[in-house]
Image (cartoon, rainbow, N blue to C red; front, side):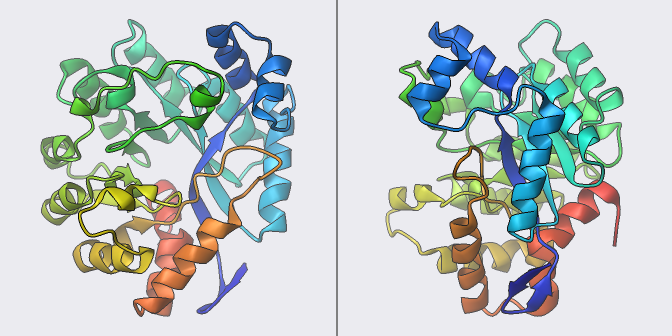
Length: 307
């Protein structure tokens, strides 16, 4: 339990990147560097080579911050076995998400295996990163796989996409924002009304469009993660309090999932994001049941079926 203005609340983080040893190995292969060279360039802490051991590091970090559970994201396609090992290594602590590239020839088999064999629950789609439309039949096929499996969600990154680790390593980021509009989620959410679609960072700059989709589709959720720096792009920049006020007016507290976008050590769990968002929620008058839902209850309800 974590102490908040609403008393002791069970907090679950809906957005944590699991930067495994394999992740750094794959990133290093792209940069032509060893894992140690990548870690040195980033000035981060080297993760344990075994994902289950690294999961223990994350579990201890959550304990230190009084966080009950977290959704771990395999942050490169193909690293889902690392997150699977982490989820299994600390039972009841983590949910597993994975990134799939619908354009890859093995996308269907890899997605099916991630759900059915590896125990993943979140399919993460990054259309701008990999250059495809959500309405491409290959993307629809992966969404259909998720729709056929209760207790899963589709996490769809929209809006501004900047991968700091690539910048630091001098790797190109040839992303295509033509494919980053939340409006693309609309028809898919309508076609799969029982499948939750999660849009992180309140749409990451496409806040208006994300709100429109959420108003029309009750199975669309917002993940509140990161500092939400996209606010500077608005004609009239908004405070986090104003962002929460607007999101709550459309979604209510039942469709907001608290997240931090934590990712690396030694920083660990990003408590500053939690503090800022709690202040914003309190400022707009979120009541105790609403706070408990946003800060963890909604995530557990979606992924465990708990009331």
